[in-house]
Length: 143
Image (tube, rainbow, N blue to C red; front, top):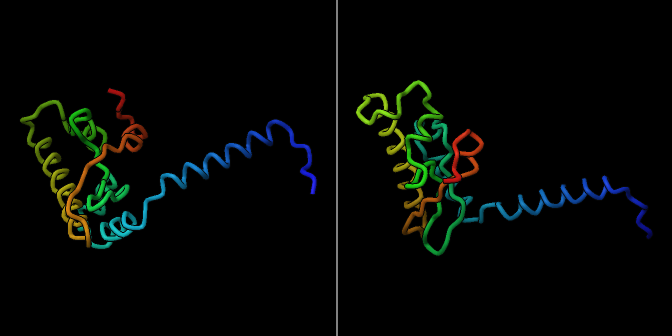
């Protein structure tokens, strides 16, 4: 069977589709991570399930679940909180509204960790900054 002559743009589109499929397959969580994500969805409180940031398992390495987080030392919580709570002055650490949204973030992140640790074979949690989510919501993560 002879492949018909394809124009450059057709090859380019085919390449893009294949590249997208390979990227999707690479980012697909493993089976254990999918189980943790299912547990997060089914066992999570209403506060966790409604929270604007989706805490999820990316992968499981040995007995450690790698979960997404919107904060770390390079990207402090106030940068993320400014996005989901633009009405709060996140530059004032003594602002009661800022303290409240910071506590809410800590509570839902702790709940996600507890649910992950309750899954069979999971002994630890490692947090990985979700640069894609942050960048898609206007948070500069290049620093």
